[in-house]
Structures are given as structure tokens and as C-alpha cells.
Image 1: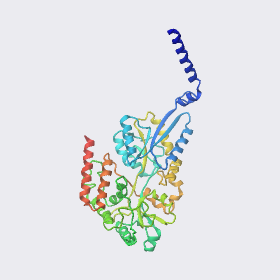
Image 2: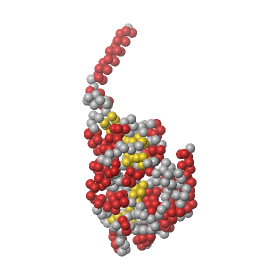
Image 3: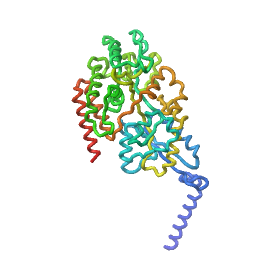
Amino acid sequence: MKKVLGSLVLLFVLILLAACGGDDESQEASSSQNSEGDDIVQLTLWHPESDESRVYEEIIDDFNKEHEGEIEAEITFIPRGNKYAYEDKVSAAATSDTLPDLLSLDGPNVANYADTNIIQPIEGMLENESDFVESILTQGTYQDTLYTVGPTESTVALFYNVEMLKEAGIEPPTELENAWTWDEFYEAAKQLTNKEEGIYGVNWTLDYGEWIIYFTGPTVWSHGGSFIADDGSTAEGHVNGPETVEALEYLQKFAEEEIVNLQPTPTEFEDGNAAMMLMGSWEWNKLKEYPETEWGITYYPRSPEGEQVSPSGDWNWGMSTSTEHPEETATLLNFIMNTENVAKFAEAAGKPAARQSSFDMMTEWSEAPLNVLKEQVLETAHPRPSTTAYPVLSTKYGQAVQNIFLGADVQEELDKVAEEVDKEIERKQQ
């Protein structure tokens, strides 16, 4: 009886195996080989979920068609439930050694990710490297080695309401060499402020995130100030140095005199309740939704004693240290970064292209008003500080500036920032 049962069980198993073996579709779905029996290299990418996700999907589809039977890439978009949800996922994956082959990262995180061995150098892997704008290469470099590159750049410029400035007899600069100084910008904003009608001279957005150090950076840099030593060794004497203090005291004046609204509505400028707006280069794309508001763009104001400076930096692609296929990953990176795909992504995102050849394809950026943004990217761009303590610097500085705009003492607030950042630098050196 036991022999009979055993035979029946064996027969049943053989029938199941035969059935599975005959399912060609199931075999193909689980196979990682091409029709000739060679392995297909599987690559993965991570990027924060955004309005431009569909463009990356199209680019990856094109890559897979071009490399069919050899390489297959799959991109995953990570929802950002909070401002650091994506970064938290990257950190967790680094701990468990489950990083994708390529991962997207915000520019200021390059130093931290390189130092903690999350990403590896791409030196010598990038095709036509000299075609990229200088600022994107500077942002992607850590300790004189290139780690990342991105398809787009960004900047902050002064948007203005054409009708309001015309009625006030104010002519905004149309050439870089004539960009407003701090004093000229302040006087224009003060003249345009009408408290009785609830109109502010200028609008700028405040939050505790990355925006504050990004949009105030040029004010600091053009005045000769800095956030940290060039070698990243200390923040003392830099983020709380005299030039940085003077730059923040200048910005504080706008809040104290109610030239800027510290609690603006999301569309204060678009609704005609602010005559000007210090905002990112991406804003022009949103302003197209408000055709009744005629707007223009002029350059970021500079310190009377300093050079013209504008902020820069955007999301980059880096090769993770977890990849087992660096050669194929480099092939994928170069496909994403070719001239046509950079232009395609930049146009969809409404951002400046990070390749000069891509910029040349985007004729709209050579004409007013977008030429101002292009000129700043090419001529005055300044990336945020490269330091492994950047997350602490950005967070603490943002909190300090919030307090400063609410009336806190500038020197005292920046002294606190320097202390916290230097603690973080010391902690990382242990």
C-alpha cells in the first residue's frame, strides 16, 4: 500500500513539473536571458516622485528598446510623504546594502553620500564631460573627484509685475552688468510697497527646508561671506562671520519694515499682492497659468562691494556602491545624459539644461525673459557648500533665518548655527 501511495505521489509531482515546463509564457516571464541564452543585465534606478516622472519613464523605455536583449533598466519613483522621506529610504537601503544601481540625489548631499560610501566616483565614465555647465560638475565633485551629474540646473532670480513697476517709474535691469545692488533693490521694493492696499514690495517663501539656504546664499556670497571653510573643517568664523552677519541683517530689514510678507498666500505675487518675487527658475512655468499677470525677470541683486552671484544646484544621478554592473550602469547614465534626453527633460521640467548643447536646442532660453535665467546659470552660478555636515548646516541655518526674520539677533542666531555644525563635523571625525 505504501509503495502504491508513493508511486501515486511521484506521478502527481511529475505531472505538475511537466505542466509547468510546458508553460512558455511563465518561463519567459521569469527568465533573465535573451533568445541566445546570454544573461540580460538588470539595472534599477530610484528617483523621487515628481511631475516629470513620465519623462524619465519614456527615457528608460527608449533605453530598453535600444539595448534589448543586453540590458534592461527599471525605474522606481519614491513618494515624498515628507521632505526627507526619499533620503530616509536611501539611508535605510545603504545600511542593508540594497541600493539601486543609479540613484537620484539632491546636489548638497553629494559630499555626505560620497563620504559615507553610498555613491562611487564616475570619473572618466562620462561622455562629453566638457559639454556640461561648470556649476553642475562643481556640485557633483567631492575631494576633486566627480561623483554625480544631473540633467538640469536651477537658479533664483527676481520676478516682477511689469505693470506695477511701470506705474512706479521703475526700470529693472536688462543686462547682467547693470544688476541691482542691494540698495537699489531695497529702494525699489520700498517704493512699491503699499500697506494701505495690502501690496508688498517683494515676496519670498519661507520654510524650514532647503529653500532658505538656497535663496539667501547669493546675498551672503556676493558680500564676501560664506557658510563653512573651503576645506569643510569648521563653520566658526564663516556662517557667523561679519560678512554673513551683515548679509542677514540686510535681509532682516525687509521683514522689520514690512516690505516682505512673512505669511504670504501661495499666490501672493500672481494675485497682484506683491510687486516682485525672489523665486526659483522653475516659477516661470507656473506663471503661464496666470495670463492676466504680465511678468518679467531680472537678475538676483548683489552686494555693492561684491560680484554678481546666483544660486545653483539640482537633483543629480550617482552610481551606487551596491551596483554589480558599473560598466552597464555607466552606459545607462550616459544615455540619460545625452544631449537630446537632457533637452527633453529640461523642457518638460521648465528648468535650465545642464548641457550647453542642450541649451542651444532650447531657443526660448536665449530670448527675454528666460535669457536672464540662462545667463545666471552660465555666468554667475554658485553651488551650495560641499560638506559632510550639510544636513545639519541647512536645517540649523534655516531655523536661524526664520528667527532672524521674526526679529532675533542675527549674530546670536548664527553663532548657534556655527556651534551645531562644528559639533557635527567633530562627530563625523571620531
